Image 1 (cartoon, helix red, strand yellow):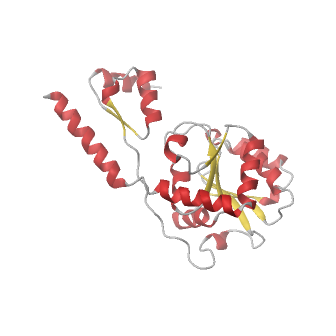
Image 2 (cartoon, one colour):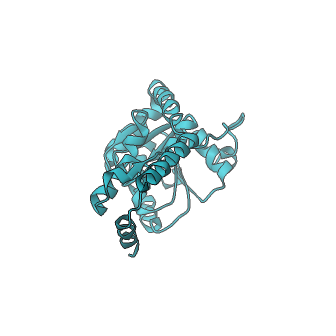
Image 3 (cartoon, rainbow, N blue to C red):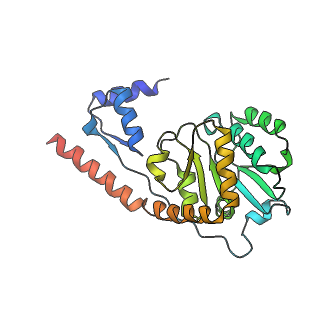
Length: 248
């Protein structure tokens, strides 16, 4: 791949680097030997979306009528998202909960075959609903209407979907990897990467324990409010000013 070489060439010429998290900034310094003072972590912002109207909004129109509650995943179907582990965890959660569904919304890509195998092996495949790519209003409604958003990623440089779920008032279960702990703070339930048993336990608790779920929702709204595009723009502007000052 030419991309790493291009990065090294730019750094050699004195480039400054903006990353969306301190985790990625540390990677750039370690992998590419960048000068720490020229690598700046500036978090992204998120754009709040309107809450669904009475009756649940668009998600009620795309899910079967038997669905009472659901766990949602939104994102591209690729190995990095580790959806087979999510399906295995959900299989344990779905036992004795016939009105609960796992909803997977997102473009199917090079992780599709592994997901196909996991769903085929699932004892309740009819409770796993794969919607493919959906438009933004449906996506936002699915996130806001979910009981839990599950995000069992193996690597993240920032983590838009769980942060957007928090802004929408949805509890989040995710993994200890990449920048997720940095970005989500204490507002998500974390499990180890690839640990289907722990993921199932966390999902089951949030489906059953209203008090625990409400507390995560409260923390999540507060955490999400920390990330604004105004702050992102301000951080980038300061980076540009520092870069210009370094030339003087």
